[in-house]
Length: 285
Image (tube, rainbow, N blue to C red; front, side):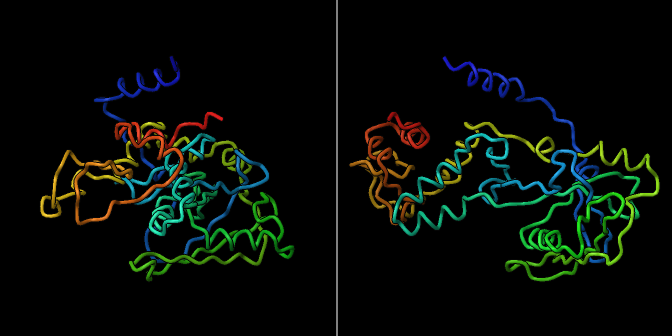
């Protein structure tokens, strides 16, 4: 008996129906919400003294909310495991789906927003482009350590409305200040800012492995995937997983994805739940 699995199931059942306290993320997270210029100071991280940046990986587009991958906590993630399975095939559609399911990187850095110092350290979220710029500046010996509390540098972040992947959003650009400055003239403020910082992984919901499997399966096989108008012949209830049985619903639509792997072949005669679970079993050898 897997006691950890039983404990997780018990916790999940006990939490059902309980009202959750609403979290005010604006106290911990910061992103520009309008066009304009903002002055920021990246401060040394309490989590990693050598690196102020925290990379996290997030699943987008498979659930109504973004889902933080379990790999952020050093655990196996069923969606990532499924991506690996897809990429073991030579099917073009599988590779296309793997690209969609692959978690995307987001980056957080602890910052003080000038003019809002009373709000303390918050986590600034940004993507790969800004991240590359910040790393490039850090690698430039002309600027040095811009997080230094005595001789660091502020940044000017400018946002404008523009096209982002076919939709309108805020596009950001950064510019480092030419002059160095102290983080604050108030030493007490500095002490607080260096000791009281939010942790992004403590703020975000951590889904259980089995819950992510359920979300993945629902995404791959929505209940309305087969409509009556699409059905030409019905010999038995539809098999909504990627393996074909000898007798199944014959539809005009192609399946959401196709899997060809040793584990899949072994699962052909199993129930559809077992077929899906087979993807996540450890190899016996």
